Amino acid sequence: MEPKKELDEKTYQSNKKKLNKIALGILITAVVVGLGLIIVPRIVTTTPAPVVVSDSELDAQIATIRSGYTKKMGESGWFEEQRTMNEKISKAQKAQSDAEFEAAKVKNSNTSVTVTTTVFGVFIAIAGAIIAGSLLYLANIRKVAGYAAQSIMPVAKEVVTGMAPTMGAATGVAASAAAPGIGDIAREIKKGMNEADEASKK
Image (cartoon, rainbow, N blue to C red; front, side, top):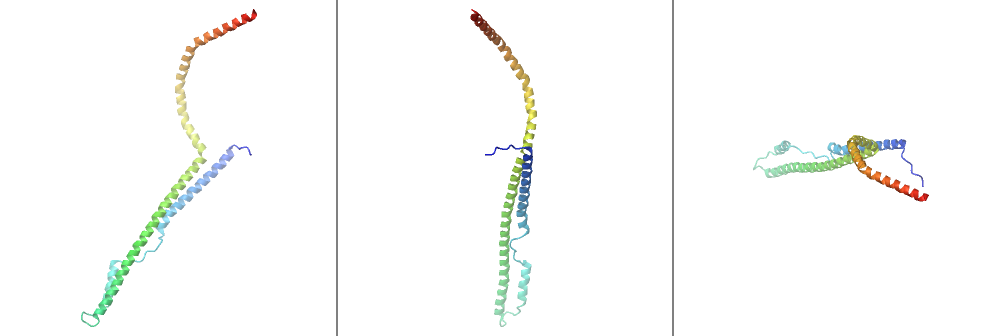
């Protein structure tokens, strides 16, 4: 098993550059794909809408049909002519109605596609931005940690500076209170050592 290599500055900088490039690539790709999915369906319609004539154009068509039939009521063939004329007018009106229905259907279909691709495009752009941001954070975590430490250090210094006199006074009080007791202990130890010394001489 190979010994674990420690991260040196050169490797760190190399990895940082790679992560920055990958993050930038992901961000650009996500934005381009997301905007493409948002914009392209609005420019390019998936299905061409049928041609719908206006009401005035339909009225003109009906007037043209009627002008071709001139027999008066009571003349021979009048009934047949009226029936034929009414059939042609009905066909023109039905064609107009069908064209309007198809146009509405195509518009709804195109709107559905546009909404779906817009939602998907926004999702891709946001997801790409989050991933790229995470990679950039990882690449620059040392700078972020350094900034955090620099912003905390003045506060910590103020706390320590404010606590030092209080801690010094508390230590002085504790030492002065303990000093007589420590002196008594030292005298007792010395006395015990002297007695042991005298006993060994006898």
